Length: 142
Ligand code: DGI
Image (cartoon, rainbow, N blue to C red; front, side):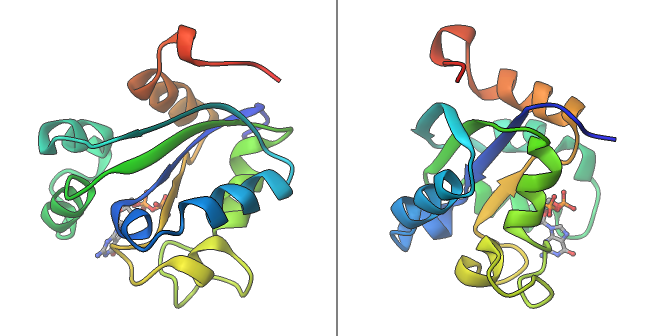
């Protein structure tokens, strides 16, 4: 069960290239998430491999790493009650064709790889991922 107040999101390279950053951040704030930290960065392949290490060896892993290191991403720490589960509802299914109408992935994703946005899958992942990207000096509680 995930009942923490923190989750990590990353707007993925294709959505950044398509100029969807403003619309996606606006949607996130409208849904009641407070932005505690925010930055644009690009992941070298070796860093993307660490971020997605639980998927190492899967058939889609090489494409995922190539895509995630192909351009800048916009990363944010978000705060809200029930952050992890509420945010995963807001982004929708990994596969945008399966994502519900109105979800961020249904609106902005191109396909299963270029699926617009990441959201932590548990409180433990959220902790690991926030420390992966941000120092405590870059984070501002609500
Ligand atoms: O938590 P999610 O991002 O929804 O999904 P996940 O943690 O199972 O997988 C991480 C990312 O890996 C996902 O956002 C896109 C990619 N991925 C997962 N399953 C597939 C996939 N990419 C392709 N092409 N095909 C898959 O089956």
